[in-house]
Length: 148
Image (cartoon, rainbow, N blue to C red; front, top):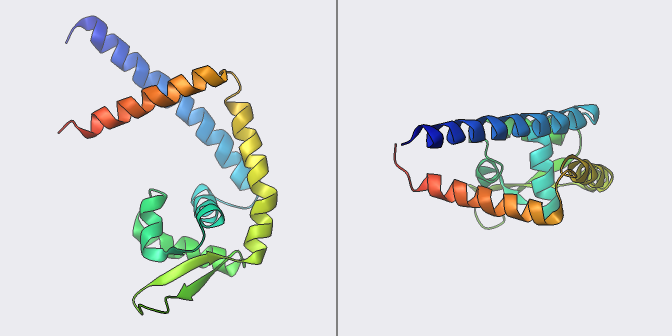
């Protein structure tokens, strides 16, 4: 490894970290202003766009430990945004499903979240966004192949 490779890798790490931090903070503030935390929003967004999901699978889909899902589902259920539905074919499986109230809430909230993301990413052209997406995919996939 050359000194130049080392410096550019460190610089890339810092730039990625700072960009992620700013975007994450803006999104979290938006969620908080709307009475949610990021995990609650992630669960609602998953159910809103993908329909009912087995509780056991939600954690993997939103990158959260399964033990935290029960707590989040309890909170969202208490607000009337989601409900638990037993599987008709397997008593071991319980689904989380968004309610009409949850759909109405997300019908209003998601377009605003989407608009915020468009604004946050507005410094990049569409071509630049496509380039960043491809480069980050390439980076992520290459890291999966490394063993530490």
